Image (cartoon, rainbow, N blue to C red; front, side, top):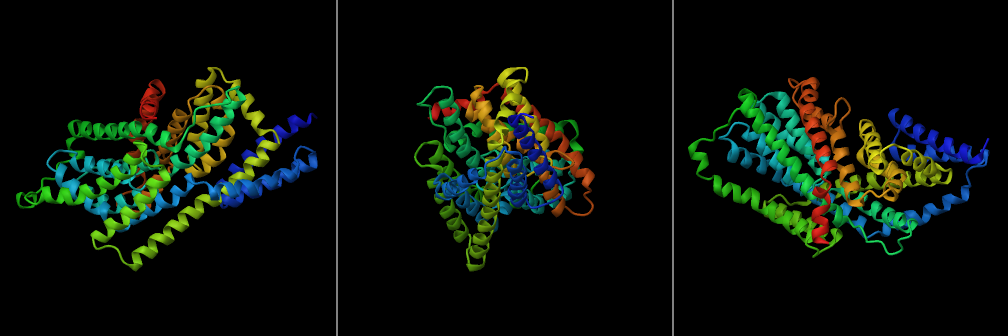
Length: 462
């Protein structure tokens, strides 16, 4: 049998094997590296793999650790954990609930608004869903909200951190796509390609993130008109409304200023994401101190949580590097290129196929696992076919956000299940998520039809 064909078959089996082991519950990073090494040994025996290629891993790992862009990841995680511990989310939800309480669906609208604000200040999906589930779900149930609508609103709002900058997912994707775009352009004969940065992806994700917020709010307000009992008004007593303006200023202005300082400096070209992340980390600590929530215990907890989350992400990245080296050396890149190039519809057909694969994988794999495994083996072909790199990154982000919500395996649903009271059944959470999944798919369709919603702002700014 042709050795090239043997290598391609083996690389395809390796991809399936990794997915199978992950479904059995094995640790992600060790599954990626271990399975790849096993198939590498099989490839060595069959004459389709040269183990000397593994020597490239040392350079890759050193590159990750010295990459200035990736320094932003632990700093943004620190910012998010610190804001979570300083009770800013709780104060925001309480204040927004009072502000919108006099209209039907107002409490739901406040959850979406706070979800967007937390997304723009944390970028960590799990923490946002759990925080909002603990704080807002009991309040919504006490107000007489339909449990299904309450659960769906919380899960959807919590996943906004996936796409609204400064998403840690966008940081990794921006760094990966930048290198792939340069290689793709050089393979096409363009030896001076325009650079793609994390800032481009942040700018590209800004309008789609706002679009999702508007769609969620529109759905809740429509629900309030069609089915008023599902989301009743929660009027605030007159004596409490007297202090509401001051409460809004105290609760809303400080985090808004922090968001403007971080995102504004990035989008305005004043600072790189790494520089802005340091501003965010220091700013979140100052906000906690001003609220009297800064002490040794909170600082230690924040630093440990940051180290734990960052380590988890980078260990997965290291394991995915082993997978990438073995997969490519055995001809997996050629297999993927032939498959995607042969799909009817050209670049658009290939893009739809990749999006469908990522959506399905989102049921069983975490976002970082998907982008570290699938992006390196599919994005180069899509970029060669002419797909815009910024549009590609944002579309993947919105797509994976959708898979976070999709029953029965959506991660956001499991996060909420862990903190929801016993009288809220898993079935209610699933049913509540379905309308928001449909809204997400609608948003993806809009971005497919109107890619300028993604590319307009980066083109304008940069």
